[in-house]
Every structure is written in C-alpha cells, then in structure tokens.
Amino acid sequence: MTAIQPVPAQELLLQRPPFRFVDELVAYDETSARTVFRVPEDGPLLENGVLCSSGLMEHMAQSCAARVGYLSYLRHIPPRIGFIAQIKAWELFRFPKPGEWLETDIVVQYEMMGITLADVTVRSAGELMARGQFKTILKEDD
Image 1 (cartoon, rainbow, N blue to C red):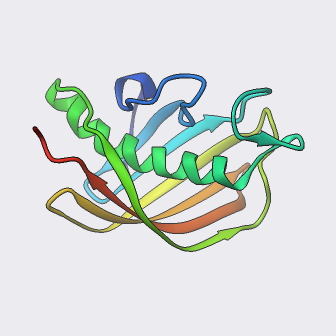
Image 2 (cartoon, rainbow, N blue to C red):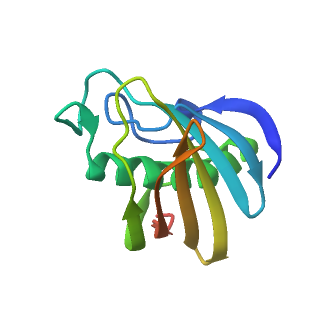
C-alpha cells in the first residue's frame, strides 16, 4: 500500500454528514487502501457512549466505497452509488469510543464487473477493533 496525499471523504463518497463515517483516504494502490476516521462525540449510530456495531460496519463499508471513489476522483467524475451485498466472517473485538481515531485497511481479494470482495480490518492506536469480509456492488450506470 502506498501513502498518498490525504483525500477528504467529501471528494470520494456520496454520504454526507452526519452519516459520513470516513474522514480521509490516506493510502492506495490497485489492491489495497487505508482510511482514517475520528469517531464523533455525538451523532448517529452511537449507543451507550460507543460507536455501535452497525456504525462500525457502516464505517467499514464506506472505507471500501472510498477506495472505489478514489478512482472516480482521479478521473474527475462523480462517485458511483454502491451497495453492501454481503458481510462474512465479521468479528468485533471492541467498540470504538468517541474521539478515537480508526485506521481501516482494505485488501481486495477480487474485483470484477462492479463487484468487489475485500478483507477489511479496523484498528485504533494499533489495537484490532474489528475485521470482516465485505462484498460490495456498484450500481450500473443509467
């Protein structure tokens, strides 16, 4: 994975605050990427003082989308709509707390015809928070 000049999420994702769960894409190559996200003090998907499991899954999915959105960004075209098709082997080790920075690595296993299968790992200060395999699908152009 190659470090890049950080690209703000608003350039890569269709999601808007408060439902954006990625701050920047900070590394990219053809088969991997890394995003960062600071868990907000308040906002959607916080429960009992932590980012709930669905919030963590949304962050992981948006990290996958940011990787694909970077290709659109380089081509100067708008990001495409995408969907989560499947989440497998998802493991949660600890819920992130507000103020924590998440570093999320995406490693593509295969990508074909708008379908991507990627292993996604989330860490905070080096501590493993969650991991899983995400299959995403890009909406076909109209």
